[in-house]
Image 1 (cartoon, rainbow, N blue to C red):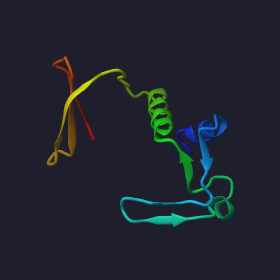
Image 2 (cartoon, rainbow, N blue to C red):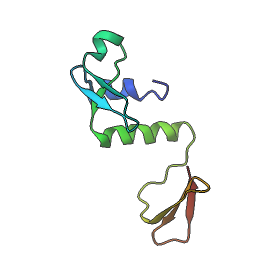
Image 3 (tube, rainbow, N blue to C red):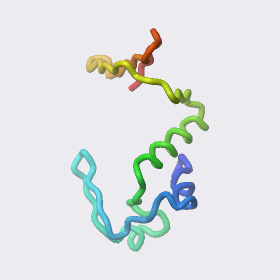
Image 4 (cartoon, rainbow, N blue to C red):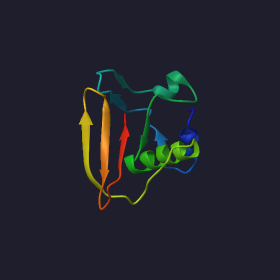
Length: 100
């Protein structure tokens, strides 16, 4: 809700309330069925193509001030477990970026 993408995806018919569906998180939390009936206007689950969701999240982050690099190939990505950081190396460049 805070990112404003819920309303945008619904308005553009890119997402639908998944009232009869379910989900399971990587942590094992699960939910099945009737989310809109039980929770009201903002349900627990939506059905949305991953492409549309990723794009909506990226554009919301950009509006919030994140630096978005598009059409940039990635040569490698290395995770430093001790630092808890990824280093992403760009293709055809000596540039690299670090992120959580």
